[in-house]
Amino acid sequence: MQYELKKFKDNQIAAKIIGKGNLHVKLRGSTYEDLFKAASVKEAWDADVTNKNNIAVLTLYCLIGQRSDRRFYPNESFDLKIISKFINMMNFDKVEILHPHSSVSLALIDNSIEMSCFDYVKKTFDTIGNPILVSPDAGAYKTTHTFATKLNADIIPSNKVRINGTPKIKVQGNVKQKDCLIIDDLADGGRTFTQLAHELKKQGANTVFLYVTHAQFNYGLKELKETINHIFCTNSYKDIEDDFVTQYKVI
Image (cartoon, rainbow, N blue to C red; front, side, top):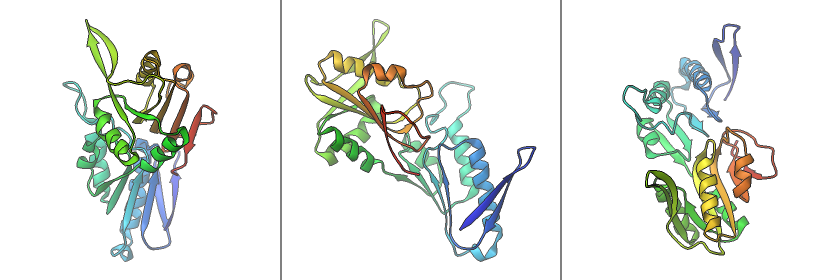
């Protein structure tokens, strides 16, 4: 199923369906405008009564707002809830989400399923050569533990704690003379990874690598290059042209 999109001078979005059959809309590094485009396409597809026995699938390679999976402070908006309501309004038969930040996304979005990133983690693991897996915080531990079990790899948890009011990274294991692979779903600025890599090397790690599925790096790579040996990621959010980064193509 093919479709065309048109954007008017006043930023209105219009869609036109070409042909008949199942619909598959794929969004990369999705924005609010992308969601409106998907809604226009879905509305045009729904309007064709011959599609009533066909299937419509929405694939979200990087779900916008997925880190805003709760109301952090009083009087602030619950952004993922708003985004999920809009996606649900489109009424897709299936919504695929690549490596969601938390289970809240799957709970809020109707007909949603998780697309696993395990194959990309395994490629990274094999490329480095049996590194220790490091979870950067408590939220990432469950997923990292699942990967470690599948890969028969060692795992070390870490967390940010406050000592006398000062935030510090605490590594719960021995990394001396080891190669370490930090695994997480998303990198915005990357400061936490920089601090963790610094602590791992301070405790004797030979090398520290980073895998993130959704590589935003909105503040550049300069600080990361000071402590991390290499970054592995997918192109779910954007393409990165830098020898310091190895990207796996998902779209």
